[in-house]
Length: 191
Image 1 (cartoon, rainbow, N blue to C red):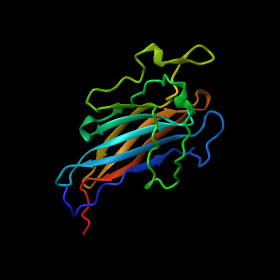
Image 2 (cartoon, rainbow, N blue to C red):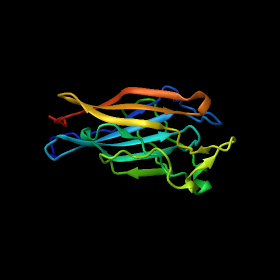
Image 3 (cartoon, rainbow, N blue to C red):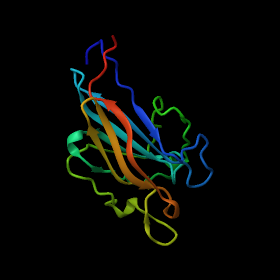
């Protein structure tokens, strides 16, 4: 990246049920997605690092990170992070709340998983039975409630993050679909 180019700012989107003051019981809050665009030295868009944080069952949020989502990958299943094994992690509070989606950043959460995006889709089911909790009916449950896919799509000047997923508590699941944020295909000059 040359000195006359501005560094890309992360973009943040919050679901329609997002609240400045979270509920005191589940569902605590909605979903927050942060996209951080990554550019080559000549200012061409390469990929975006995407963080999806679910505050439905954990007031500190459970995050799923995709290090480098590219246009060529098409639709990618949203990876499910491993369930936390340390109960002390669930006691952390989220002290950062933002209403401006362009200037907000994703809160730091130790309940995260990071994946390197590949053309293979990631399974939405946890692989290890230790990572799964049972709900009151005895069904498998993970505190990360997001199930669906994301993709980057482009036109000549912009790259858009497209989502199609459901999240939330079973009787009241919410669906999000559409284009939620955009990135410039070329990094803008500071001049």
